[in-house]
Length: 102
Image 1 (cartoon, rainbow, N blue to C red):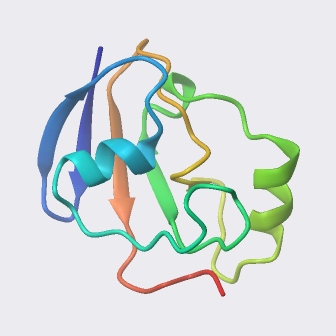
Image 2 (image 1 turned 30 degrees about the vertical axis):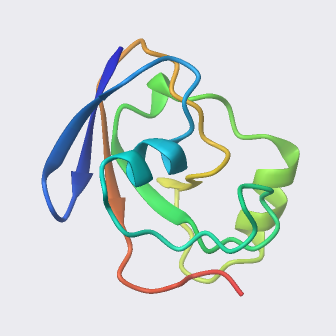
C-alpha cells in the first residue's frame, strides 16, 4: 500500500499496488479530466508527480509519445491513466487546473 496525496486539495488516501493514478484520484472523489477512458490517446489526465516517482510504473512508449504532444509537459509529468502504483513508496501528485490534452 502507498499513501497518495492529491494537491492542491491535500486529500490523502491509501492505494493498493497495481492501481492507476487515475483510478485512485477518482476513488478519492477528486475531479480530473479523462476523455479517452485510460487509453493514453487524449492526454487530458496529465498531472505532475511531485514526490514518489520511483513508486510508479515506468513510462511506456505510448505514454511518452502522448506526453511529447502536450504543451506544458515537464520532468514530473505523467498521464494518470498510465501510471500504476507499485506500492513501494508514498506519492504526491498535483492536479492541473486546466485540460492539458486535446
